Image: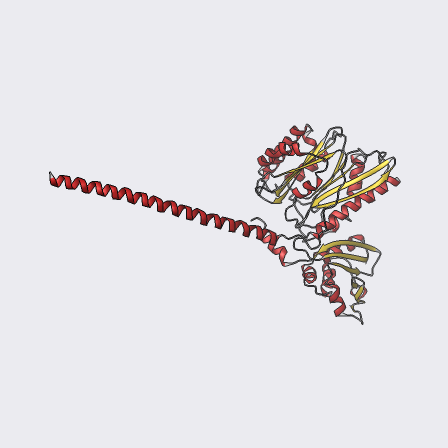
Length: 470
C-alpha cells in the first residue's frame, strides 16, 4: 500500500510539473508571438516606406512640367467624376466619368494601329453609325489596363462597362464612349469599374475636370489641361481639354488619350471636319519614343449651350476663330505630353524647311525627332550635329548634301556640305544646356516645311519601361 501511495504522489508531482511547464511554454510562445508580430510590423512599415520612396524616386515630376494645372472653366452641359476602382492598384484613383448633355455633338479621331484596343474599335463603330444627337452621352475612362489584345473578352468588357453607364445615366449605350489605358494583353477587370459607377454618378459635378485628368494618368508625372475662349456671334464660346500621355508616343493620331469639351453650337459633321484637319500639325507632330499605342483616342464634345449663334458655315469669321482656338488647345495638350515624356529633360522643336514636298518635310522632321542617336546626344548635352546629318540622310526624303543647312537655335553650324568656317564648338555646347532647344534644318530644295516636337532620351526612360508591369 505504501508503494502504491508513493507512486500516486509521484504521478501527482509529475502532473504538476507538466502543468507548470505548459504554462511556461505558453508564456514563452506568447512572448515570441508578440516579438514576431512586432518585428513583422516593423518590416512591413519599412517595406511600405521603401516602396513609397521608390515610387517617388522613380516617377518625379518632369522638370519640363508647367507650374500648375491650369484653371479650366466650367463647360455648360458637362459634369465630371473620378473614383478608385482598383483596376490595377488598390486605393488609386483610376476611373473618370464625363456626363454630356442631350443635344451634344460628338467627334473623334483614333490610333491607326492595326492592333487597336476593343474600346477604340467600339468608339469608331459608334461614331460611324446612326446617331441620336437629342440623347445624352457619356465618356468613361480607366487607367491601369489597356483592354488591348484581349480577344473577344475585350469587347465583352466594353459592353459591360458602357452598358452599365448607359443604364445608370439613362443614355443610349450607342452614346457611351469608353477608353482604357495601361498594360496590354491582360483582361480588363470590368466588374471593378461597373461596381464604381454608382459612386461616379453620385460624384458628378461641373468642376471635376482636374480630378478627371488625374484619374487617367499612368506613367504621367502631371495632369494635363488647356483652355481657350472666343467671342462668337451673340456670346462667348469656351473650350477646355484634358489629356494623358508620357510614353508610347508617336504620331498616327493621336498618340495619347484626349478629351476636349466646348459649349459651341455646331453639328457633328462640321465638328469632325475641324477636328480631323487639325490633327496633323498637333497630335501627329509629336513623338517621345516612336511607338504608336493601341489605345489612342481623342474625343471632342460640343454641348451647344453657348449663347453664341451656331457655327454652320466653316468659312465664317467665327468658324475660323473657333478652329484656331481649338487648334491652340490641341497643340498645348500635345506639347505637354512631350514635356512629360518618360524621363525627359529637354523639350525640342525640330524645324524643317526647304523641302521639295510636304511629305519629305515630314519624313525628315520625324527622322530627326525619333533618332536614338540624336535624342541621346540631346540628353548628354552634346552638340553632335553630325547625328542630325545622319538622320536627314536615312529619312528617305530627297536631300542634297551640298544644299543642306543645319542650325541649333540661332546658330548655323553647317551648310553647303561642310561645317561653317566660324563654327564655335563651345557656343554650341553651351546652347545644349538649355531645357528648351531648337534644331533647324533647311534642305534647300523647295518651299515645303514641317515643325514637330520631341524630347531627349535618358536612362530614366529605360528604368520606367523596364519596370512598367511591376
